[in-house]
Length: 414
Image 1: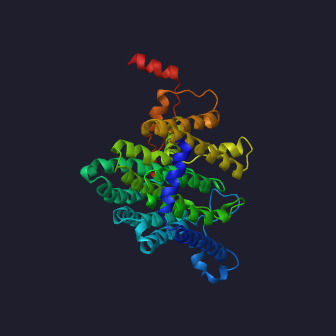
Image 2: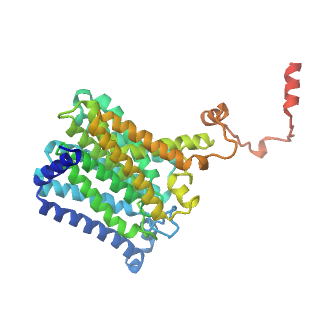
């Protein structure tokens, strides 16, 4: 039996277990609810603004800094609320699709989702300091990882917690960096959710399939108003919630693969869709450090910015190219996993993604004559303090400028 015949039989086995009519109705309801939520926000910002108290408008209608079309960046509020309600209703209406054990993993995420709503909104509205945002983000992720690690890996929950913390922080922040162009977030999420569905089919993990379809339906409602010229963006709430949804899916998938696979193999399979945000974060941090900047300070040197500003692509075209590149890598990784051990697919996708990042961006990341040196590392590691002295504390002062030669003479005299 060929590779494609096996995939076909697996797909049929999975979807024969589902009540497709009910599932389709559920997916359509998620899409319509999401679409209605975004429509309502835009209506209240436009013709219906008279229904919103003046003092409340600045807290509801927040313009996206990344947008050139005046788009709002409160799309994440709709995505998060619709996701939580939809998943809860899915469990209540179709309990045979989600086991109690799997729902424990999902339930662990609700507190963290509310936390993301709070700190994400504060950042979107007031632009809180990066250090404060990171602390709030870590608190949210710690709550989730502490609870889930006991569910999916109770025999060594401490190790599971550390691994989950590392990858969760990377995935949430990496997802944040993948939001910057019209339709970009949607296309990346479509590829990643699709990858989770493809990985769920061989083990008949219906829960992951239903949750990924929920995410796709929710994001499709967002796409209606995110097409160029976009009217609404995800904002901090949305991209962080997307990252959390990937972590939830990876946790459930890991739990499913552990039934018939080793822990390491399960980890390789479940983390495969999340390689992109991980590479995005790592490349961005290293690039900024090598440029002598703080890794937490944003720049316009992401691949989507380069394709638009340096190569003249439209935002839609650039997002399609980048999503297609990642999709191609995932397909090749899946095929490699089929013919070899699970870790080869993960390694291949990591090097593949890193490779096209380098090919697309390297010559635009650094200025002429750039070279690696210890000075760059010193600049990043050693804090330079500047003290401000009140003028009323001194009587007079003088400025002495010494050349390098004078400094050397002083050292010789000593």
